[in-house]
Length: 115
Image (cartoon, rainbow, N blue to C red):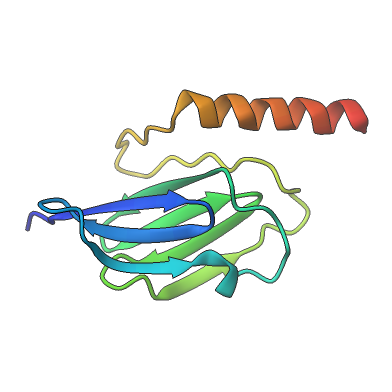
């Protein structure tokens, strides 16, 4: 079944948009699912089946694509708060902007240099 949704991640929010007219179907603020006070500026989102996987600042969140409700959260304790890169089992391409990757790399270099 073909879906008419586009999923976006920006500034700590995830939303499903209607591809035909751009209207918001649902949106959620990620901070309601995360205990830490980290920044939500850079992240990655991946759709696999009926679930959305969001990686940001060392945290993984899984949401149901239908309505944005929470499936689970993994704060990856001990991994730090860097950019989370994901690959799904279907080998689907998951494009991220080169600007986001560059910013994540710069943040990692800065954090490593200060250590």
